[in-house]
Length: 163
Image 1 (cartoon, rainbow, N blue to C red):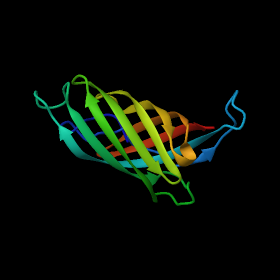
Image 2: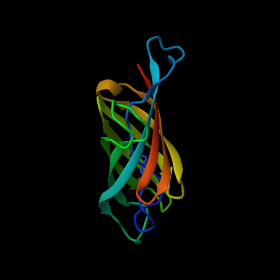
Image 3: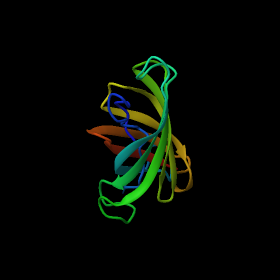
Image 4: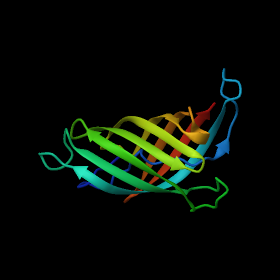
């Protein structure tokens, strides 16, 4: 997932892009038993649906749906660098020609991670809040940072606190 350029100007870098379990960290302050993980992925994005209302190009009322294949940037989930470890789906709803809302879910080994937030067309890197998940990622909180690598690729870094 990456946020950034939109169809017609470039490929979405959808913060829809996503999760794979990684490095375990220290317990979260004030939360006995909780811990942090960092998941590092490469996202390859595709636009699978769109509604482009007048005027042509990004504008209020436009809607895009993107999916991404998620590959390990580092060895994680018991798989090597470059291995496919999941996929994500994100819906982009434009409120203006430069601003939109992302609602997405990444499916990874052991569960899903949900992310939601606002982003800007001009951004080549952005951070969205993680609002929960299922399975291994149930009740997770944190962020996903998406960095545009050009074309349809992005680097996604999930920083998650798991209960």
